[in-house]
Length: 345
Image 1 (cartoon, rainbow, N blue to C red):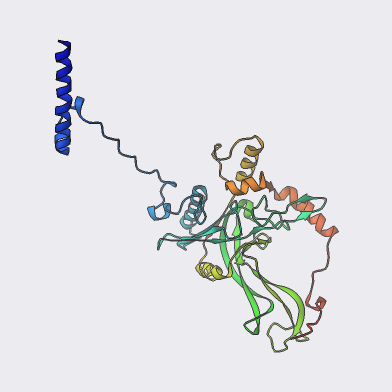
Image 2 (image 1 turned 180 degrees about the vertical axis):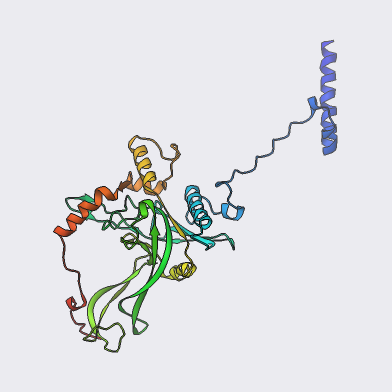
């Protein structure tokens, strides 16, 4: 009996194999208890940011040129809020992730949902400074450790802004293409709220990352920028796209024109990450030996390794100390008459 039972079992397996291998439909017609086990279908990918269109989801991530989920979520929500209350009608908006490495790292984002375009470009962060006897607020060119909304801190402040007017000013002459050229740099003023409310007082905005480093004064009496004696400042054109700013958001000159054109006479929003709450939370997590990501917090991993832990310096605590420092160490600003006359022209 035992042999017979075993024999019938073998025959059943052979028949099952023949039927299952004959055609897909034959296998599907088998009773459920002997039907082949098929792998379960993969569930659809969970959107990185809820409510974001698929074309924009494709740009979400932590790689170079991608935008982290929390940065996009907040930038988009802030823009939509300003559209709803009538402050902004511009379909494009900006975001900046100051926790990412600078240099060639693309961490400033131009997002136009109307025509489904996304662009990421490099941007500078606030350099800060070592204020002897007050605090060392300096940042390296690669990663920002210190942040503040205090006047004279030269630091980046995270939060929401609305763009205002564009002002263009003369910065000096430089030599290029066999000629002397004036640098006219445009500045897009930011208006803030909350922690960023003093943006205009601090002269915080966006502009090309270029300046003329003055060397001497050159006589060009027919220049519209010459002083009463016919002199203009002359120097070396410096492109600091991979460097640091005085607290403003600055872009490579090759990208600045397009960015400024989007905001000219059409106010839009700028969201800068991290805010004070993010900096404090990440700092506490690091000091407690907890991984920020495991605590549900975001900071770029490369820069977090570089800086150890970030610092936020509140305006109400820092600004009085900086005002006192500047009064004590004040020096007259350099003027055109302080420069030596250029030896050759």
